[in-house]
Image 1 (cartoon, rainbow, N blue to C red):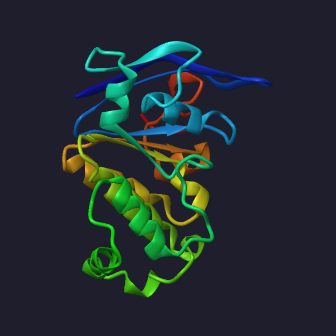
Image 2 (image 1 turned 180 degrees about the horizontal axis):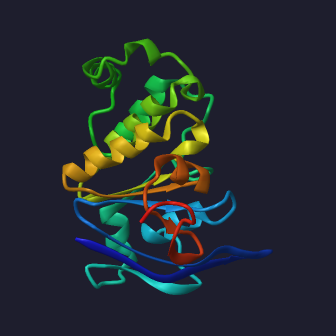
Length: 212
């Protein structure tokens, strides 16, 4: 499977939400996409997943620009104000909601078993906002990857929760090893900390200062 975005941009009522951005991502690959806050991370994520129509350019999946197929195959994880959990919900409630959305058993017993199976019982009653960033991102990504038909994952600014960028970058690598196509949207500073090549939001170029 190959995702290709060419010159994708999104306009808002007060100006550009996302300037033209191009990228290519295949099965078994992880890709870093970086930009300053406000550069259009979530707008790009939603365009890639067929949930937002670009103002210019297009997103193709194996050569097809069918938004319904993009939505079926690509999941956006933890997008601010779109798919992120409400901070006031408990960890167990969030897990239950995500399992239900993925079409998996989500009754109280199933949720407890899922949490226990991953050794995360200590967080069950915690508000999701108090759960460590690496745990939050790993759990939301793990359940998104279990949705039927999903073969690509877009992690939307996991660095906004602080923590070590290496944690979510290693998570992206482990998912790529399982055959998923994984894009992680982050800030320029996170990309520099990782020292990894990255697509720059607003142009198909690498982040300045990051080795190629």
